[in-house]
Amino acid sequence: MKLLVTGFDPFGGESVNPAYEAVKLLPDIIEGAQIIKLEIPTVFKKSIEVVKEAVENDQPDVVINVGQAGGRACVTVEKVAINLADAGIPDNAGDSPQDEPLEEDGPDAYFSTLPVRAMVENVKSHGLPCEISYSAGTYVCNSVMYRVLHLAARSYPNMRQVLFMFHIRLSRWQIRIDRLHRCRLRQLQNRWNMQLRQW
Image (cartoon, rainbow, N blue to C red):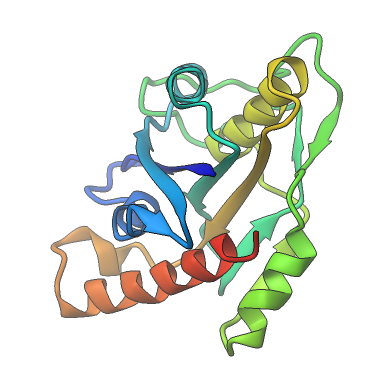
């Protein structure tokens, strides 16, 4: 089995994005499954192009998109992505779509094709906080989740996909990767490992 795990590059003027920092700490093999790690741009149009190229080249069985969500107190697993781009801030290319569909011919929403509830319960059973989320927002995280599910529905029906989002106060990640930084990343890495072992 192959799993493609993506994380976003820094955005909003920050120097670090904890999403990809956590992804980088994953081992290359988990329970016999190959883990392919990919940093993707926080850009509405380019992000899906980068993921699509990796899907075409690596043919993963599962795609997991890891993102950062301000205001959330724990790791959340997204259940649904909607066909809407509505940026509160410009993406890294300076684009700020407002009330625009992500795919003109796409449905209003896609549900994750992974066992979201079971994954959340698995993490919680290990004593770590985790919740289901029913809104991935309308920024690039939602865009990637929706477009990967759209890609899977149209071209890769056997591929499964989910989006993780988590929140850590960004100021803790900005200056340098210090001891606290690595400790928190290890906690996130443990959660990813638990999720990946769910399959």
